[in-house]
Length: 84
Image 1 (cartoon, rainbow, N blue to C red):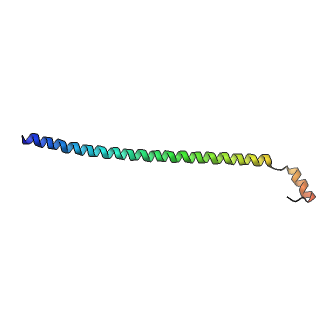
Image 2: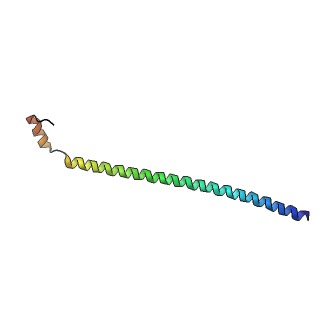
Image 3: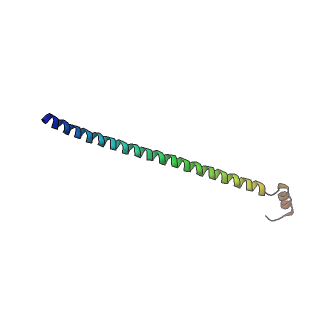
C-alpha cells in the first residue's frame, strides 16, 4: 500500500516537474520567436527606408539633370554681366 501511495506521489511530483520544465521551455521559445520577429521587422523597415531614400535621391538627381541651365547660356550671361 505504501509503495502504491509513494509511487503515485512520485508520479505527481515528476508530472509537475516536467510540466514546469515544458512551460518554461515553451516560454523561452516564444521569447526567441518574438526576438526573431522584431529583428526581421527591423531589417524590413531598414530596407524599406533605404529603398525610399534611394528613390528620392534618384528623383532629385533626375530633376536637377532636367532643370539644369544650359552651359552656353550661363557662359554668355556671365560675359554679358547678367546677375544670377
